[in-house]
Length: 68
Image (spheres, helix red, strand yellow):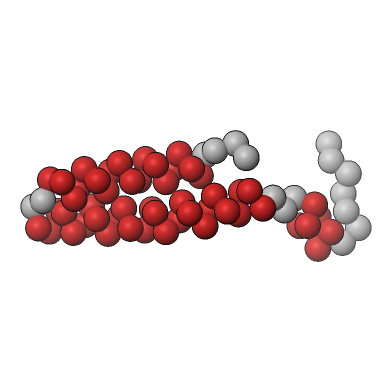
């Protein structure tokens, strides 16, 4: 078990990882854009937009699962 920090803020700074934050700053907007591409492709019946959106969703989820 991990040793508890006397303050909540100390525990939060102990778990802070800038690499994980950078990956989230890339992956979250990519996921939003991918979702919009899928919706737009569905409404316009454009298979290219739907497929690009699905590829972008998998890329975003892959970045979020990356073991920093």
